[in-house]
Each structure stands twice: as C-alpha cells, then as structure tokens.
Length: 258
Ligand code: NAP
Image 1 (cartoon, rainbow, N blue to C red):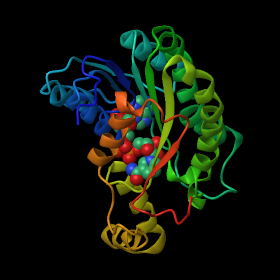
Image 2 (image 1 turned 180 degrees about the vertical axis):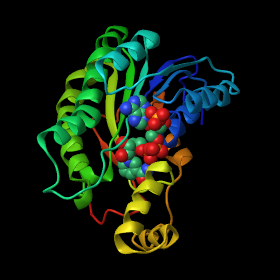
Image 3 (image 1 turned 30 degrees about the horizontal axis):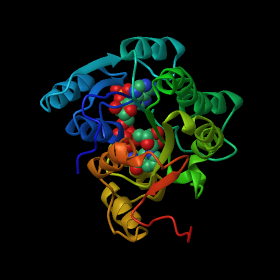
C-alpha cells in the first residue's frame, strides 16, 4: 500500500534502537525524510546510515530528549516537521514503596512532560499548514497496570489524559494525535526486563522469556518492524480519521473485550 507520505519530514525521538528505530525504518520505506535522535552517537549514526539506504534524507541528533537543552537541539535541527513520533526510555521497575518524589519527577519528565513539550512545539506549524501526524509510544500499562512499573503506569496515564483532550482540539486542523501501546517486544528493553525477572526468581533469562510467552495469546514477542509498520500507517494519508486512539500492539496479552 502506498502510504501517501513520500517527501514528508518526520522527527522520530529515541530511535537508534528498538521500537523508535522500527518506526523510523517503516517511515523511511514510505519515503519520509527523517530526523533521528538518541543519546549515544555511535548507534545513532549506524542507524542513520542504514536508513539512508532507503533514499531518504536522515539527520541524526545525539541528545537527551528528556532535557530542555537536548530537546532544544533536536527541535532546532528538525525545523518544520509533518510527522512527530515521541519516545524515550522507560522508567526502572521497583515497588510502590521504593519511589521518592525525585523518582516520580524523573519519570514524569521522561514519559509525560517530554512528549507534551514536543507536541506543543510541533503543533502550531502542523496546524498552520493544515496537516500533521503525531504518534506517542506509550505502553500497554495504560490499559492494564504492570505492578512493578508503577512509575511508568503513572507517567503514561498523565500523557494519555493530555492526548485525549488535545487530539480533539487539533483534529479540525488536519492534525491527528494517537498513542501506540506496546506489549512485550523483542528489544533491549525486554532483555533488561526479563533480566530483572530472572534475577528476582532465580531462573535464566531464557526461562523468564518462555514463561512470559505463555501469557501472550500470540505465543511470542512482537518485533520492532511490525510495531513500526503500525506507526507508519497511523502517519499515513489513510489514517486521517483516526483521532485520539490508544492502540494496543500486544499479541492479545491484555485480556479485555474493549
Ligand atoms: P530500547 O530498545 O531500550 O531503545 C530505546 C531507544 O531510546 C534507544 O535508541 C535509546 O538510545 C533511546 N533513548 C533512551 N532514552 C533516551 C533519551 N533520554 N533521549 C534520547 N534517546 C533515548 O527500548 P524500546 O523497547 O524500544 O522501548 C521504547 C519505549 O517503549 C520505552 O519507553 C519503553 O518503556 C516502552 N515500552 C517497551 C516495551 C517493550 O516490550 N519493548 C513494552 C512496553 C513499553 P540511547 O540509550 O543511546 O539514548
């Protein structure tokens, strides 16, 4: 399917690896010029080189997207964008009694206030030009809490509330905002989460992964490429009537009717 977005310009945050990279790859395949970001320059440059092979222009900005300075650098390099994919690393696991105010502020900064600041920066230009697509990478924890990820549950719930109202305020200007909610995907983040479970339960990482697969109707982890394909569709010309939605990509893991 031609996504109808060849020649558009996208900023994909936190995209040297994992789900962000999957989104950037599928946008590159659709002919979208890219601005990529991550903190580590080496992996970022390698990803940028890989994506240039698709014949699109790729600018790489090594910066922490959760800091005001880093965000400023990224936004300045991005300039006028048609598509924004927000993403950042997720907060660490723990127990409800572990977290201090500072831990919550850090999680809110990374997974709520950063995407909100990025949307506030991108929206005026998109609205003035009458077209825009914003996709926020959040988590299945928005629909079904993951007890060990209380910091993530809290911050992403706040972002989801902001998007629910804002998406409906900007839709009339041709701009859509939606959230993609990953269940478990085979990325470095999953390896780190499985490592934590393995340590806590005294089992191997492979056993932890096999046990987790048993809880997923699809019987496997998702891939960054299939996640990216869903993102690229939401950014396409065909998705203009999808507004303010929270779309689970979880292999059926969250057991709900709606
Ligand atoms: P990942 O494989 O660990 O990749 C994270 C990417 O983000 C890397 O490119 C990393 O590069 C970059 N990054 C991290 N912090 C950053 C920052 N402050 N500024 C700029 N770039 C940053 O993670 P993932 O699995 O793709 O996860 C992406 C998001 O989805 C996370 O918020 C995660 O919590 C959420 N999620 C993932 C899963 C899953 O199963 N994978 C499930 C639910 C939710 P640098 O380290 O070099 O900066």
